[in-house]
Length: 318
Ligand code: CP
Ligand code: NVA
Image (cartoon, rainbow, N blue to C red; front, side):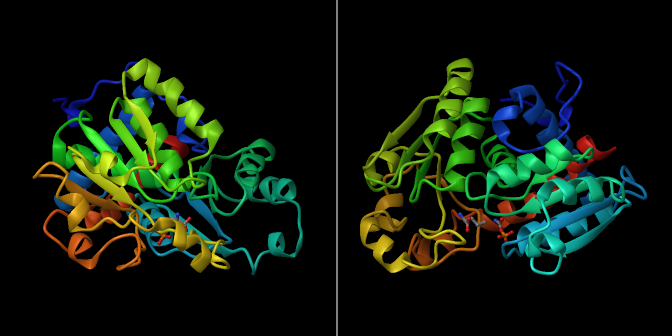
């Protein structure tokens, strides 16, 4: 049991960006989560500390979003700042202006950039060519903000980062970042996916390196039942991520037996929690009975996006 609300940092937070969770030490992740819990408590008490008074966040989206867009915009507003929504198709980036020029221009006008896009390298180039903090709001490879909210949710329900989390489904961006997050904080994770839909090899190597330090057990299997067995949390995500819609029906054929439903969750611990980053496809990766059932914490995860990202912005942009 750890008391995250009164977590004492081992070192001063020195990150400039949030590009990937693997760049963060466990101590830095715990600092984010601790501040997130404090900000959540304060908001519930009606307090909105103006930690980013007058600061401006540019939000670039070349993919759709509900949670990420609304939580970043509401979050910076609650901290005393403001956000600009920049749709990829409206700004010059969408007409071929280089990411390096975009980074240099935005750096002269705003205080931080959040970007949701396809290529991880575009996020990294923004950080390389700009001079302001860059936050990864999802790429084809990673979704670090989601996983901070998920770790916070797991802690709220389980009181620690021990136990077993099962991820059942596609080895996608969410699965990749989840492996790193669990590896960093010492939470055991078993990922079950169909053959050919494994997580990214480089990200998995980074997660294993983190796990070697924390003691987390990370297992990749093709057996959904093995993952669900004795799990404290079961996580799934869509079988076709944004940008993969064409050919999705062919892909789905490989996912028979990977739907998180009551048959699978009956293998979990009685007090297991069901997790999903949302949006969800009921009847595909998860049955309605599970996602809308008593063990589901999906709306806590969604809410925690707000608190976790406020903490990230406050630490990076103040
Ligand atoms: N989970 C998540 O990132 O949701 P959005 O796509 O709605 O932002
Ligand atoms: N894996 C999903 C996550 C959406 C939040 C996607 O990339 O579409």
